[in-house]
Length: 337
Ligand code: GLY
Image (cartoon, rainbow, N blue to C red):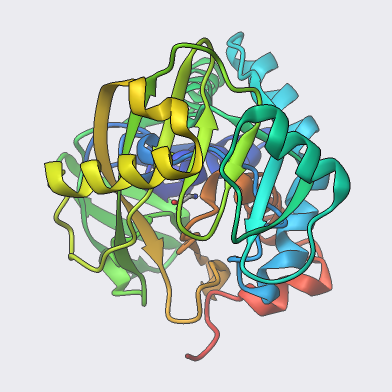
């Protein structure tokens, strides 16, 4: 059996980006996923690059800030390797919070856009958003074009340490690799890691006129998605791995959106879906070595799209035996909870 340098388990945006980073460092890489690439949380995500969302845990900020720094280069590289575009759909975000003070420029924009913003303190943030489905497709194409085998419908049932690496027992036979990176999102995977799903139901509507700004409050967010399309989200539910979309929950979300932004009332719902955010006990991702030759990159909860650039870079450094930035200790995959 051919032994590769690295087997990545999970082909969400995190797994695909980690695979690409490792390939770029000269490792031979295979990716195995129990389903289709980038079709779980990566497909469902909102795509806000929300570094300064006050709902994020404060401890997440150093990682978010590092990822923001790496993001332009990350996107350019994926575009270059895939020959696909991943356009930023928006460049600013009106953030509503329950505490704090509104800025004048934010209040002006609230009025200009016709938001019913009473009850919130508004700030205007320079923040991008992208369509995670663009990113997933480009990462997949970049892997395909760069010698990374992405095995779909290939469930990894067990991983066993061998003398010279790891043996993965999969639904499509065995894989041998010197190292393994687990990128299984909210699935605890063959090592029963402490991650769990947090369901989000969402919808896309077609507006009569476009919006050019992400609008986000603790209760609701509106994300322009090109043309007149607006993504509205999201519920946060502990419902196991159930991804059922309930009409009543969608109607409640739409009502909440209408209250904040009345033109949503006339909008047509064009898509509804639910995704599973990968939660962790402290709300922070698990990134790095679990034991010699075994690594994890999972549990990114609400920010997998934003954190992908730093996560891939961190895994690249770690697998190559290079020093990680000091900030990464807070996210160590083998920390105790
Ligand atoms: N990133 C948005 C959400 O988790 O709903």
